[in-house]
Length: 290
Image (tube, rainbow, N blue to C red):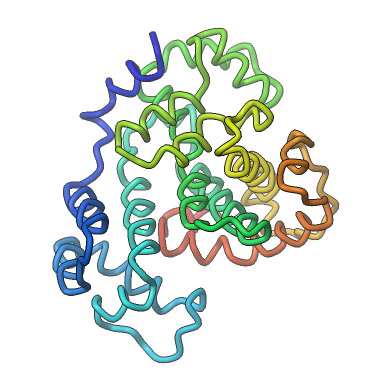
């Protein structure tokens, strides 16, 4: 079995809504206008609500209420709109995951926190397209949901050995399936026609030093962002985030980005400040865990 074969099994289970696919195609069309985009967004009332909430959030520094989809799209931009649409849709695609494996509210809290950290890290090191880093961080763990949904018995047996850490769990996946959740997640994202730099960041997230040179910085960012998110679990977000943090990422990742731990302490605090607001917009149900 390969990650591509297993990812193909879930195409009918975890399919992005038609409005998302239509909008994604439209946003890649040269000279598309706001009126055309608005017409597609307005086909999904839930999506309309998310777009308006985002455009009215302090993230865009808006003063005065935005109540028209077209104005909201002009404010947040086409690229941010694409990422918001995909993000909100993905959190609704994965249903019926066995509760014994994961609490979905906590899963999306971690994913969104990782996404925020990745975007902040990207800005710190002057990566051009930080929106793609947001998506890579958000989607970094979807491969594990595929394992839970399609190979529950094997995964249950794997967990019976009580892996002591994320690294141990990934190693157990490699032994059991021949690939890890990272490779499986990348295969699913490739099936969704996401760009290679996003797939690569997810595929190599566990081993930043082994990533292809052209995507090394994106991989290093996701690797560190995941560690930051893990240190900011819901219980930690209700406590003092200034508590000393012991980084658990591969030091090679920070070497690739040429950053030091003092930089990351600032990113961690900013992540905590911003993540909750994004969670409210993308997946409001996750706020129930706070």
